Image (cartoon, rainbow, N blue to C red; front, top):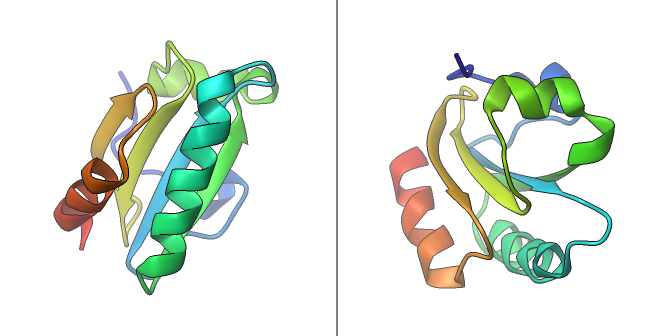
Length: 104
């Protein structure tokens, strides 16, 4: 069963004050690069939101616990670290902004 709440310690980074965009990536994943740009741009636009990128290959225990089966996979966490949305594949900026609405 996948965890519904993640801490900064589990992610290896601090959570955002309002929300956190967690991206699981792999080294040879072309869509991961574009996803990184989209998520970083959105995090920079919205106060209190941070983007955390996790290398899936180096964090296999977390990948398994969260049932991440593809990269990129994006999780949207609320201020308390609760997973409120998840998506696989390269997101569109508008979709990320809309998903943040569930966390804010």
